[in-house]
Image (cartoon, rainbow, N blue to C red; front, side, top):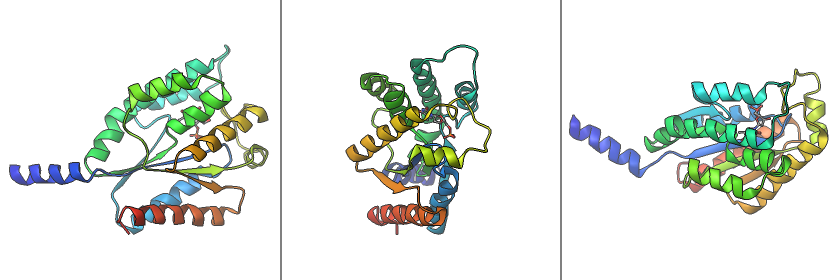
Length: 223
Ligand code: TMP
């Protein structure tokens, strides 16, 4: 029994799970497209865990609440950045790393690319702050595949016009334009990021997201 357990552990360690993240700005249709990603993994019988950032553990979900609520005091970009990486530290350590190490796949709604886009590009924090926190918190761990849903912020704002907005969603157009530019710059730099035009009808976006996941599975020899 002990030997079988040991063998299962060896297999898992030599086959760590894949880490897939989904990014996009407000109104880009992240929730629907997360379903599209999960449907492809399900269809291939892949054991995966779905989670989100900020969040994914009780403490990180509490930090999410602090991040998104409105305050009667200015919230600095650096405060946001530190909150995001504190939440991420808990999440990576208690959920993401152990699951990947056991061979389970992880699908995460946003990860560190969001910090580069929102706190780096849009709040204007120096990239070296982000690089340092990234190294401290997850060092060698990077997503294997990131799907970025790209959308003109004006269109995004129209899509969420009737929704009750949190502190971040209440930001102005220039902020979201900078977020978009931040994401596009990262997509240019990293091959793991696939950009999908989210201004297309939802079914078309969903099909393209599913096709990108299929392509990734094929490259990994899973499909
Ligand atoms: P969402 O769950 O609707 O995507 O909301 C999360 C919000 O938090 C969204 O406005 C983006 C923001 N965010 C950051 O500013 N930095 C980060 O690192 C992450 C993960 C999210």
